[in-house]
Picture 1 (cartoon, rainbow, N blue to C red):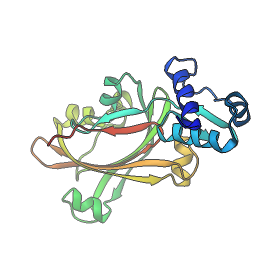
Picture 2 (cartoon, rainbow, N blue to C red):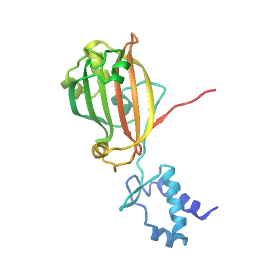
Picture 3 (cartoon, rainbow, N blue to C red):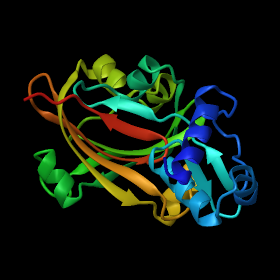
Length: 233
C-alpha cells in the first residue's frame, strides 16, 4: 500500500469511529510527518485524496478540518426546499433579502410565456439548514401572480403559499445544474471564500395545468449540497 494511502486509511478510521467529528481540525503537516515518518509531499497527497472524497476541507491559513455531511437532494422527485430539508432531518430556514416587482428579464419572460418587461414579482432569499447558510434563491412568479410576504415568512415554503393562496400545485419542473464559483456577494452571504465552488440550479416549475408558474435561480454551497439520482438502463 502506498504511504499516502496508509495516512488516508488512518484518518478515515478516526472519522468513522467518530474520534474526529465534523469541524475538528486534523493534525498539522509536521505532526503527520512525524507520526507516519513520511515526507511532506506524502502528507499533502493524502490530504488531497481525503479532500477529493469530501471527507475533509482545507481552509487557507487555518488548517484542514473534518467536513460536515452534505445535504443530498434526490433529483427524481420534485420537492420544495423546506419540504426536502425536513425529510432529511435538517431544520429549514430562510431570510427574505429582496422583495419587489420588476420588469421581466427577456429570458425569464420567455420561460414564463410572458411579454418582455412584463411586471413580475421577484423574491430573493437566503436559505438555511440548521441555521447555517446553504443557498440563495431568486424566484420570479408568473404574470399577475402575487403572494403574501407574511405568509411566506411564516411557512418558509413558496410552494405551500401558492397552494394555499391560489390552489396552485407545482407538480413538474425543468431543471438545469451547473458548477460555478462564488462571486463576491454570493460568497459574503453564504459565508464562503470568493471563488468557492457553488452549484447553480435553474428551475421552471409548472402547475397541475402545465402552466409555468415560477422561474427559480438558485446557488448552493458546493461543500454542503449535492444532488443524487438513480439511473436505469
